Image (cartoon, rainbow over all chains, first blue to last red; front, side, top):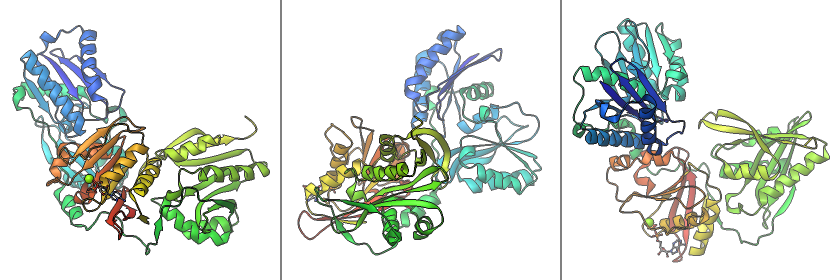
Amino acid sequence: MKILAFDTTGENASVAIYDEEKNLYKLSSDDAMNHLKGLLPMTQQLLKDTGISRDELTHIAVSVGPGSFTGIRIGVATAKTIAQALGIPVIPVTSLASFLSAEEREGESLVCPMIDARREQVFAAGFLTGGELVNEVIQADAHKVADFVAKSVAYAEENSIDKIVFYGNGCDSYKSTIDKAAAGTKVECIIADESLRYQDAAYVATLGAKLAEAGGACNYNSVKPVYLRKAEAERKLAANQLGIKKKDREPQVMVELPPVDEVIQYRVATADDIAAFAKLDAACFARPWSEKSFEGDMTGPRGCVYVAAENSKGEVIGFAGITYILDEGEVNRVAVNPLYRGRGIGDKMMDMLLADVESKGVVEITLEVREANRSAIALYKNHGFKVEGKRNNYYAETGENALIMWKHGRAE
Amino acid sequence: MLIKINSEEDTTRYGLSLASQLSPGEVVCLVGDLGTGKTALTKAIAEGLGVTEHIVSPTFNIVKEYHSGRMPLYHFDVYRVSDPDELFEIGAEEYFYGEGVCIVEWADLIPDMIPSGSRVIEISYGEAPQERIYDIGWTE
Ligand SMILES: Nc1ncnc2c1ncn2[C@@H]1O[C@H](COP(=O)(O)OP(=O)(O)O)[C@@H](O)[C@H]1O
Ligand SMILES: [Mg+2]
């Protein structure tokens, strides 16, 4: 028996070969989500490395999902094509059950893989070890993550199982949910070590071998991808909402696109600008600052300097601010009315802030910016800032990363 | 924000400036009756992203991909989608949470598929023939 196995349901594709002597060979791609390009070359490489010819292969095992939509299609199609060409059977393995092979297990424990399905949902199942090969005691489905974790803990408690092991990228996205549940139970809740946490062709190969012995191989024709659907309830609920846009907090004023050649004036801001800043901030950012935050900056004890840009009607259409902490400066916010972007207004305001920095003799300036905010990053780079650090999941609500940028003054 | 668009030229100007603000992974929802200019605005955004291919309405294929610009552009028209499963079957989620910009005409028909924090432009007719009102906001 020589099984060739694929997993393309996670971020990194992998290929494995498992033989009758229980040797396991594996290659995985470092390129995230590059399944289409990587899979066949990796397979050829692995056959070459192991000196196994493709005619020796007896089965193709493939992870049929749930997981990455495109990945599943590529993996399943590749497996079927090769099986057909070589005239050998396929062993379909679900990505969730494959985690049963992730570690040696003794006795009864609950294995709970959770694949992030976004919006607080996971594709997940609970498997009880120690008995049958695949004993699915919590049905594979799209679950609300909090419900699923609660269900797992309840199952373990009711059946006197001392240990739950969670796998999959759902552990990364919803670690706090697991931690919370763990704090409220005597059941030991473990998040699998990073080296074991994610889908892997080696798991597919080993479980596939056992399934094949139990008669789980089939003709390539009958292999179907497993796409789990999100919970129906959530879909219906959302569909019932009228419109998709958040309701506006205040009555809106109608504006027109400004003339292309409108003259913009710049000045140092005062506390009188607070209301206008908060309003502009709300138009610029998904998570705006309140008037109170601006007030704290502009009237509080910290050394802050704000500059403002005005259009020909005297309306504030941009602002930028910096806070001084001892001998360092930190750029707080640069906002430009969306209708006035692309006119160099942000540049001009940065120049003003940097002139203030210079006049104060401060040389170290830092700021943090959303990693996805390319136009802001480009603006800061143009003004001499360099990316020097990154904080993962910095913005709690969105899980986005923050880049930390620095500009070191005269020292460089 | 409410914007009064006075002409097709304004639509183009707005689309170009919006394009300069977009980053990979953003979803822009265009909501409005037939003929309000959702496809016209998409063309302007595409131009702003540096897309050189000709943009045609993807009504019959749900999504079209353009790869010639600064970042990939995925243009959806979900008007004819009668069942969310159709979107599921083309892997729409992977576009919405992917590395390109998604523009979705008729996004209000698939509210549950749209990621939170997506930009929404609701377009309605104004008084004059070329006048349009853009009501701009974000999904919950
Ligand atoms: N201000 C405007 N913005 C966009 N299109 C306009 C405008 N004024 C008139 N039009 C016309 O309206 C039509 C809009 O068509 P289209 O972009 O296909 O709309 P939709 O995609 O919303 O159905 C075009 O024929 C265009 O010439
Ligand atoms: Mg259209």
